[in-house]
Structures are given as structure tokens and as C-alpha cells.
Length: 276
Image (cartoon, rainbow, N blue to C red; front, side, top):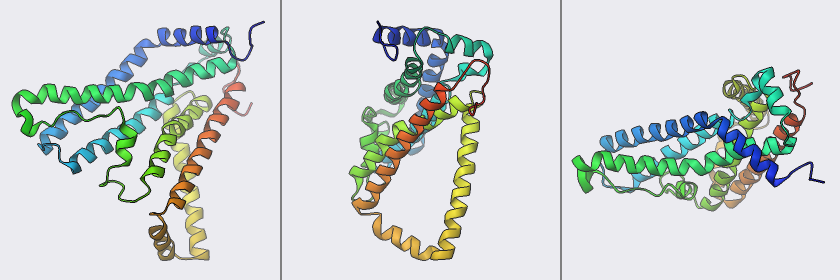
């Protein structure tokens, strides 16, 4: 008897089905990311006109990582858009693959697949910058390609961006965040298939606002802002606080993905309500 939770052949078949049926959306997303980065890289090179100076190189890594984070949550929010209609729910929820395989397929395509595809898009965009500008600028005004295939490490170790000694833990936070942030919007896609990105973004903003107000009230009651600011400035260069941030990021990672899986299992054809 086949494993009812996970079977490799079933998973591959479901993965192939998802890619074949949605290849236009996936291809358009990849081309859009590549096009946006290529345009901004060309414009950035024209504006700076540098020869690869360290501060400008740091800005390029910062820019690409910001695009990476923003594009990653948008793509993740598309994962369960098939739940928007009853027809889509019937097709998705009654397919022969198991519930776990369906969840894993969407996570593989819209989260892990994006993480693999993005550095390739960034590298191609950088090569496009060189191909477009080199005939007019040459080596003086058009620096050579930057290695975006190791984006997280290079972003974490840019002195101009994070001038502290805790770069190793900062990099750990970035690696965890690569899966935690898309996991949050994957969760949003399960809860709100319609306008998932906007609704998830609004919910996060509302929660952060409420938490921020509570924290500010707590600080004003038990301490003062200047004392807290001095404490943060004193401890931010130590491993302890960055280790704490890394642990908190790992907790969020597990929480978002576990909630996404739990709520996904509760979906049915009739209702979109996440509490049903």
C-alpha cells in the first residue's frame, strides 16, 4: 500500500501539474523580476558612473536584497490563489495527491523555487547592465559583474550597512528570514486567497501598530525612551542580542509554516472561512 501522507511519484506528478498549468504566471513573474532589476541596475550605473567602489557595491547588494525580500512575499502570496473560486477549490482539494503533497508542491514552487530563481535573475540583470552600457562606458564607467549567487552572505558582510561585530548572527537571521517572511505570506494566502498580499500586509501593519503602542506604553510606565535607546546601543554589538534575534526569527519561521499547514488542512470546498 502506498504511503498516504507522501509518495515521491505522486509529489512529482503534482509538482509537474502545478508548473505546467501555471507556467505563464511563473514565467511572467520571473521576467518581471529580471526586467525591474535590469532597469534599475542600468539606471543606477548611469547615475553613479563608478568603477566598482565599495560603498556603491554595498548599495547594490542592499538594493537587490530589498527586491528579493519584497518579490519573495508577493510570489508566496500567490501560492493558494486557486482557493478563490469554488471550481478552483474542487480541482485543488480533490486532486489525487495527499493534502501534505499539495501543500509541499505550493511551498516548493512559490517559496523554494523563487529562492533558487531570484539570484539567477539578479545575475542575468547585472550582465544585461554590462551588455547595454559597456559599448559606451567601457571599464571605467561600467564595473564588472557582482556575484549575486551568494547574495545573503555578501549582504550581511557589507561594512557600510552593518558596522558591528555580530555579522555571523546577522547572516543567520537573514537566512532564516528567507523562509520566515515568505512563510508568513504563504499563511496569508491560505487564509485570504483573494487579494492575499494586500490583506496580509494590512493585518501585519495593524498587529505591529498595536504591539508598538503597547511597547511604547510599557516603556513610558516602567522606564523611559532614552534609557532603552542607550541599552540597545550598548548591547547591539554583542552576540547575545543578535543570537536572541536569530532565535526569535526561528520561532517565527516554525510558527508561520505550522499555522499555514494547520489551516490548509482545514480547508474545504464549501467555505473559505479559516475558522470553519
